[in-house]
Length: 167
Image 1 (cartoon, one colour):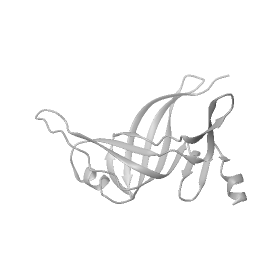
Image 2 (tube, helix red, strand yellow; image 1 turned 180 degrees about the horizontal axis):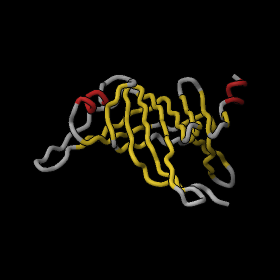
Image 3 (cartoon, one colour; image 1 turned 45 degrees about the horizontal axis):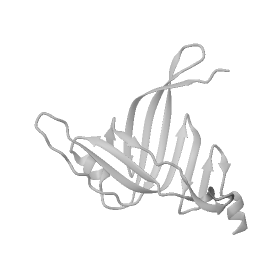
């Protein structure tokens, strides 16, 4: 059985509230980590709690000081859209491109510290608290976690459906 091999990221862009603010940046999308509770079972055992998430954070590292950096680091909630293209190697050996997107709603972040040195590029990393993240790969939704709307969907499975039906 062959699975397409996901290759290098070719390029990316970042939009803040629908305005292009950066290209070719490094970013780390939030991890989806379930909170856990301890139960007694031959001692103590941690059990994941579906419907309860640990804190979600987004980080963006941008090179250069410009309007885009200032726009990304407003001290208010923002909606980010990330677009990136990755190479795919198929079973016949051909290479094609695949588009990916992530939509992230954030709480106010921080303005990064900037190290300035003659002859070197300046880069700043900003971290944000996340209330919503949605990821698409090749046009298909892979994950949606919306803390404020009580939505948790991964690969098409609605993990909050049963919980919400009981409330």
